[in-house]
Image 1: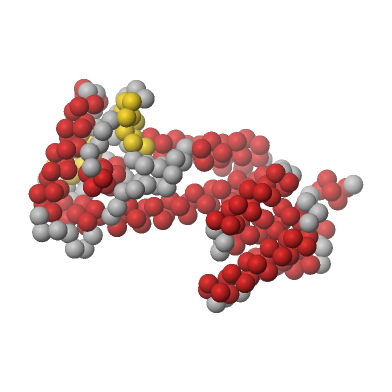
Image 2 (image 1 turned 90 degrees about the horizontal axis):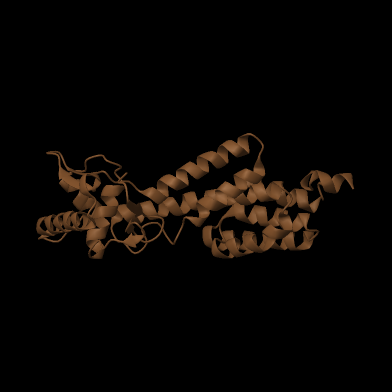
Length: 262
């Protein structure tokens, strides 16, 4: 990665040098940069780049546009004044390659989540949760927010899913630590935002049950079941149905060990 020049994609694309934002040009030029950053140093052919940014029906003058944006990015990098460590956008003969650049916030997120997973596997749930929260705080919005193109649209959906999976795992860890009262409101907000997300519904039901609110937990299931039937024409999955059945029969293993011992 370039020293002093930081690229971020966990939100709107940004390039920062010593804390100051570097202008990157119009949105389509930024989309070209975002696509090339995501190649992580691998060359990308001209045709692949055009398809990624403009899709299957690019404008007739797309070659001129691509060259214009590549030139614009080279000028932006030169203006950043990073000397030998500046990002370089080079033509390799087989495609464009972005050198001396990386996605810094994404790399930091990966490191934090690797450490969180290691902490969780070693049984340190407190540290795992703290690291996962740090990873969440790196997000400033949607992935590559505001940049259009089929490639980035697909990446945005993929990263939204990955972000949700990390959130669910972190909340699951919080419940294991007995923080179910603190989790109830956050889980309700997340279910409202992602009403068809069965894992979130299940965690919300479990938090409510452990707070001594079994009727609300059962009501949350019925609401989710109605939504799933209306939207997908299907019953909830087996995991959510099993949790519902265990709450109905007041399965004692759903409660934390501290509650069972009291």
